Image 1 (spheres, rainbow, N blue to C red):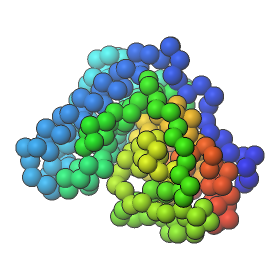
Image 2 (spheres, helix red, strand yellow):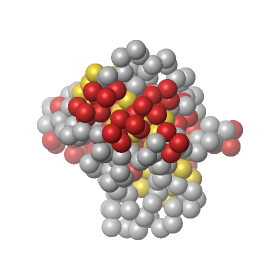
Image 3 (cartoon, rainbow, N blue to C red):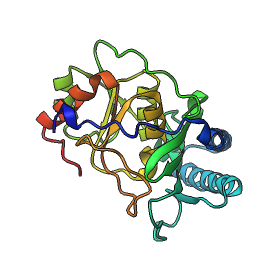
Image 4 (cartoon, one colour):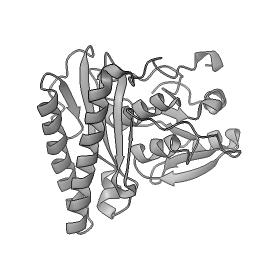
Amino acid sequence: MGGDRVDTGPADTGHADGWRAEHQAAADIAEQAGRLLMELSARTGPGKDRGKEGDLLAHQLITGLIAERFPDDRIRSEEADQSTPLGTATGRVWIVDPLDGTREFSEGRDDWAVHVALAYDGDPVVGAVALPGLGLVLGTGAPPPVAPAADVPRMVVSRSRPPAFVPAVAERLGAVTVPMGSAGAKIAAVIRGQAEVYVHSGGQYEWDSAAPVAVALACGLHASRLDGTRLRYAQPDPWLPDLVVCHPDLAVAVTEALEASGVSDVA
């Protein structure tokens, strides 16, 4: 693995006029689900029951609205029955995480998110990430510009189970680590210029990253598997355990740090 193998994704990440209705729908639906979850949080106490109810209510709202607006499209949701085959990756598939960061939501934190994405022929062309606790929706319809990278890179990591290789990669990059909750919140931090690097390995599914990766690519950030290959969605198996999202100026350095730390192979 080297700099020449870095693949940031498709050249057209979906913010052409042909996807305008989908961009708007993703943002609207994510915002509505986020508002519902904030209302639930306001009327319930912290705990696992809040998280379970939030997962279910947001799933019902999101999948219902997508089916209403795009009745011919398939939907893959974390809260759906995963025993039902999705079929071919060809065509349009909505990939949603109704509540990314159920633990954080249950605890009353603000580092959780709502993910709504559309994959076309396996590429994440449309995405919206609602951060209701912060009052924000990030979307491919109006992706924010890439902020200048900080002199000392900031690397967001899981607050509860960071990968074992994180210290070695951070040391090679000269980075400081910033613990944070959900995958959506961590990738959103890179999108918003509050961090430069997010590296994950060890267990995620398509719904954990499809929407934030769509927004990251639309912004011009680097996003790939650990080995630098393209992230592909709407695959028969939703397991997608590793990814890198980082500032484009650091893509080669991150790639080399991963390789030197012995974690550049796709899981």
